[in-house]
Image 1 (cartoon, protein in one colour):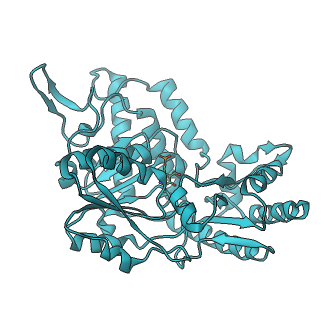
Image 2: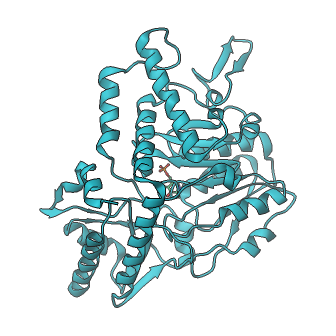
Length: 403
Ligand code: PLP
């Protein structure tokens, strides 16, 4: 992999902040965008723009073709059986809300249970909690060990006859833990319970195959995988999506409307009320093209090598405390150094041009489990380099000397 050549595809990486070269290590929050993704947005606005699905005219048909070709690109990317299983949303958060709302309405009642894990992002906790308030369902939580690995024995014990769904992240956005999703899905299915995978932090970094995982639902955001903001995906097995009621009502999702009775559109349009972000979906397809051109295996290998290097160098810093030591881990490292507040460390690194994330990372229950208020998080993407890791280490050393 020629990293320098790859970096040239991302114009923002050559900018400076506070007169220092940008070292962008906040990829877990959002990745930067390659030129071909941004160009596709601009080009489509300039030369194709028209509302999709409803037009007989040339531009509308061309925009519709691009939009639906993007659905096919997503289908191939995660190896879904059909495009009817790919629902476009605004992002992971909306995908989880859609599922919790529709699934909860159809299949859950008072006293029913959803299993989540202690390392979930708020967007895979709060939608279920809203359902708890509305319908009286209960959340059950898979615990983890001190290395940040889910306890699978405890997971199995959580199932009861009231368990209706399991919803767990494939990769923790704080600990980097890669959860054994395939095995966890198998356990859920043995109890006749469907499984939703939060793939927000996995699809940018590894090959994800919904059929291999046998996932019933899987959600992710375009902006975390080199695509534009405002677009996401809910994958669902057709037999499940067919049985779920619509989430929002409006145009596009209907077949026929009268004041007496409305019938709904076929899959996946039943879940896509209103004008979709058809420009954004083209951007997502371009991001997928980009990742495929580099190669998912090469991306995974590069990030794995970079993470191993970063772990080794960071561990050598005195007073370093790392959070997450799972055997299987992704390109995310959370840490604290001595008594330095995470916010101070992040702010001072920023002055050196180094962008990291600080705080609770939208995972406050996990912070409680770790016994901290927040951490500093460095998260890598395909364009990061060992030199950038060295800059991070040098930056931390410099801040340490100041305290
Ligand atoms: N799930 C995980 C594991 C995440 O890391 C994030 C974002 O950080 C989300 C869900 C929410 O994604 P979005 O804000 O794009 O909806």
